[in-house]
Length: 240
Image (cartoon, rainbow, N blue to C red; front, side):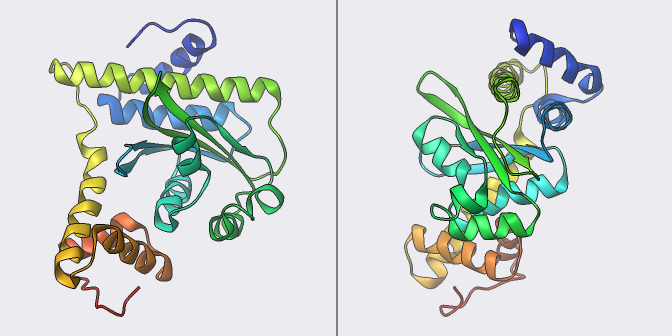
């Protein structure tokens, strides 16, 4: 692990108390999310890896509900996570009902239905290079205190350092990387290519159809993609 200082170092020690028996970067990130959810005024925390050309995967989450909340943004194609990644700066929505409904109407409606009323999305980046997003979900609406916000940003910095360190260790053969965590992302884009060929549509429309089907059937995009690849699900031209 890289050698952070100050608050990031303290948080690293907290994560290490529970993560020492876990193998690889994916296990470390999962424990980081659980620790963050305990330390912050939050109901859950999730981490997604993203690229500028649209690839994404939810790499870790504190619990199943937070993982579902994270994937909801990709299913719908809107939400604080996507905006934070595009802008390269944190997006804090203190009250989804008041501050977010105009920007992400479908996402906010669904999030509130799942008991989430406030979201903080923080880019994980080094300079101009963006690796992904850490999202903090809260059941209570309202702004974070300055101390809580600083701690959340420190967790995001630790996640970024962990990703970079994990990549170096995996390349050196010293530890497991994120291969297992990335599998769902590859499944989505394989399914996207299949739909493009089957229906004769663009890649963008193929992904839109997968997202629409997932939303209409209250499922995750990754789950729908797996069914498409397994020939369990075949999208017809009128299924959007």
